[in-house]
Figure 1: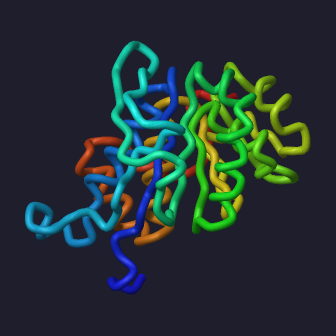
Figure 2 (figure 1 turned 60 degrees about the vertical axis):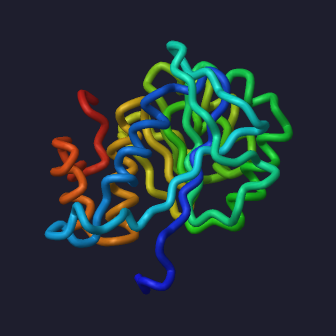
Length: 212
């Protein structure tokens, strides 16, 4: 990738009762990525990360942790990558036409749009999973089926990479997906080095852990 195109701008959508690790996991991956491991302390991440909410003010995540958005959906700049996390709050957001329309519109302008956990149900309601492979948390396959009846739901996969729409299983699986996104843009070696920095296993394949 041409260095003049860097940093890539990543937007992570946040909303009340979003799952903490669905946000923090990908955020950590993108923030610690480096293109030159030998200059890790001197160089910055090739990603610029923004937290995006529907309106100004803090968002209360599952468990009470609070996130402060950098921008709202009204003043959000152009994005290279949109991450839509999950959490209990998605049960409300699947009925939020303002958010669904924004996700659908933004997805037409990004290089990749990705979801973590039940965020895939928001992608489904936004019309982004028609005929596409998708997955979600193992407890919420029916929720996804209701939101995306024409999606090819993969209960066996940890993540799906159906360009330009990616989805992952629940919670910690967002880290695996984010590492694969790093590899998508900057190569497997960079993805593996990022995982090593985090002391997290790099996902060698897309199989769901413990699936039989």
